[in-house]
Image (cartoon, rainbow, N blue to C red; front, side, top):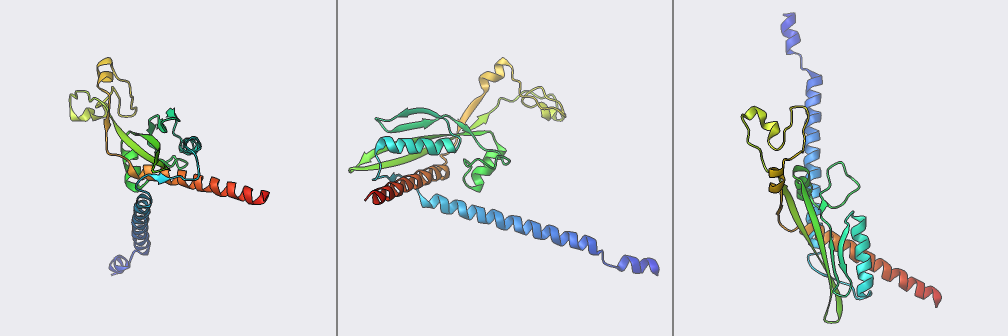
Length: 218
């Protein structure tokens, strides 16, 4: 009888742990949905070129270069007369690189952590109907590695290079090096929108500062 009574008593510790785990899962799902919603709002904010009526082309190029540099992009080509700017490919930020901002939206963050991807930003600054326009395009590429022939499923850890169960290596032979390639993916419209938004804010801030200086002088 004593054994039956003990077994019939509820395990409060286990029940509490289960409830805490469920609450944690629900909280994570809510955070994920909130982040996805914010990403969609950011994407809808700017979907095309922005207007810059208060700055010249050279000044706009300077602002754009500074914005890209703060997002850890390195400039590969810049042509002020034609208003063209292109960055070098930037590897996608990993989950622990919290100081970076090139992964815009939950889907792009997931892609950057599951695969080796890189992004290249291109800016075009032109005059249309007497007004300065700034447009941005971000291209995404994913690394494709050539696979090695496997003798059995047990050697799956050596799919790409001669690796062991405890140590993974990335040393390719001459034939494999020739097979390494970057595959073009879809455009990253969310990152392009974020870049344009930051440029627009900088231009508005500079125009506000200049107007404040003029008022102080008068």
